Length: 198
Image (cartoon, rainbow, N blue to C red; front, side):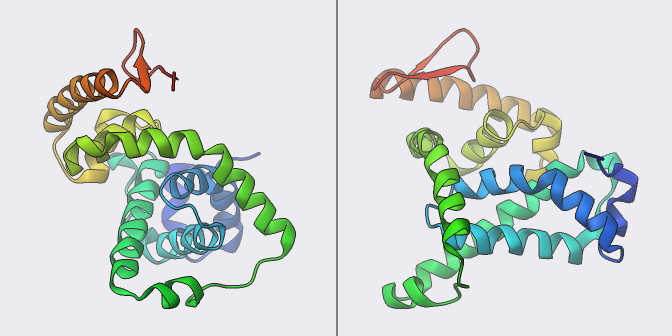
């Protein structure tokens, strides 16, 4: 599989071939990011699509000197998921269940359900991070779960790298104490190497 050079990302909004390469390179990572935060396969599909549509619209704003394309894309995904959560909070239950879904064939639903099942343990870990302040939790998950460097996560969150390092240090200490208190996660030698012991 060919990867799109970072210098080419600003052109995905105007070149379908470059967009296809970009999409194939990052669709899995974006799908996993969304699946950890949403457990409805229809919504996962819609939000993943929304992330790439937003990336097309914002492609001219990407700058390779600010980080890898995946960190830029996960920043967009974070905003798309946050917008969804805010929008869902305002809607009634019936509207949430029916509104805005597109029909998926059985194979697509099964594939999304498999992805959601694969991310179930990570969603449990994600929920156990509720004891962290929002800004620290976001930083922790971008580094620990999404594989960004601290500098890349700082760009996504709009903070200085030094600030991100301090917050991450505090978050690691807090996660270790929360894990010990809940008895569900054992943090081994490296703070991001975790075993579920429930």
